[in-house]
Structures are given as C-alpha cells and as structure tokens.
Image (cartoon, rainbow, N blue to C red; front, side, top):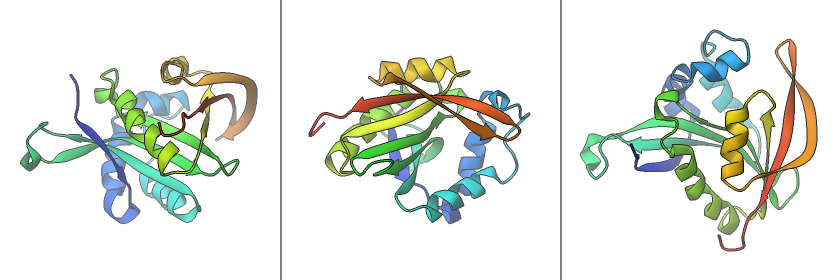
Length: 178
C-alpha cells in the first residue's frame, strides 16, 4: 500500500496527542529500550524539548486517509526529529525518523526522506546529514543505507535510562540543489 504523505512542523499544543498515538503504535521501538510501551506523556515532553532547542525541528509524517480525497482528512503516522546546523553550520543531524508500525515497510520513510532531502539542501542551508543508529537496530541501519547513508566507522556510547547504547555514526552528502 502506498500512502500520499506530507511533512508538517509539529506544535506541542496541537500535536502531542497525535504523536503519542504514533508512539503507542510503535511498541517494538520502546521494546528496544526495555520499556513495555511508550511512557505516558512522552510526546508532550519530546515536543517541548524540540521547541526549546534552537535549530531543532519536529516534523510530522502525515498520510492522507484517502489519497485524492481532501475531505477524508489525514493522520499523523510518524516523526522526524532533526537539528539544523549541528554539529557544524552546514550539517543537519537526524535524531529520529520513526514510522508507526502499521505503516512500516510501505515506503513511508523513504517518501518522507524524498520530501526532506531536497528541502535540507535548498532551504535548510546544509550539505551534509548525520545520524546515529543504535547497534541493536539492524532494520534502521539497512533503511538508512538504502537512502544512501554510509557508516563513518565512528561510534559513541550514550546513556539511555540505566543502559549504555552504542550509536553507529552515519552520514550522507547532499547534492547541491537536490
């Protein structure tokens, strides 16, 4: 099934409930972090943190309920959390690209990246995108490799709750005017 998608800047006062639903529809994501489910209120905390940090953006991945029928409405089905001009002025860093499980393996993430990549190059003022993939998430690693990201050979350990998580660094150079 192919979805007609768009990206929407998220606002904590408008989209916290819809993002919490995306989190609830993504139990495997939370299981990776040894949580039974998305913590209550997690979306509100995440959106507040996004709004407080200069250069950070939360973009909702929105799918039309019935492609071609604008009266059928749309629903939030994913999240891209990114920082512009970090860690360098011409770099963007993707913190997360999450698609709710019922919409995975339907090219939603690929279509979202196809919308975001040219914007980052033309309007975002960046020529490189970096991200870190948890070593225990081979699906994400394969996904980002399919988009043209490459492993840099660098890794870092970050604390996630009581555990240390190893992030494998990946990057992609954006074509000018992509």
